Image (cartoon, rainbow, N blue to C red):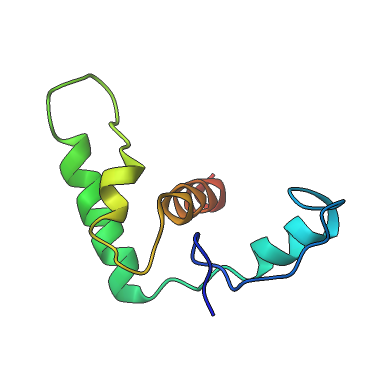
Length: 88
């Protein structure tokens, strides 16, 4: 069953909630991105970046997540920086 952030629920003892092995387990269980979700994410990111409201890349992950029903804002942020890291 998926939890609030698109990860499967993992029982965490109170002493390790928010850190340690439990956090690693939660990160490992993030739902994978489909090709369609990747395409939508990149298209919407380009749309937001092309708007002249501000200079530079405008990253509104909250708004991006609304176009991806199976992804949270946290999932979008993680995906963006994971992709950025692999491109360097």
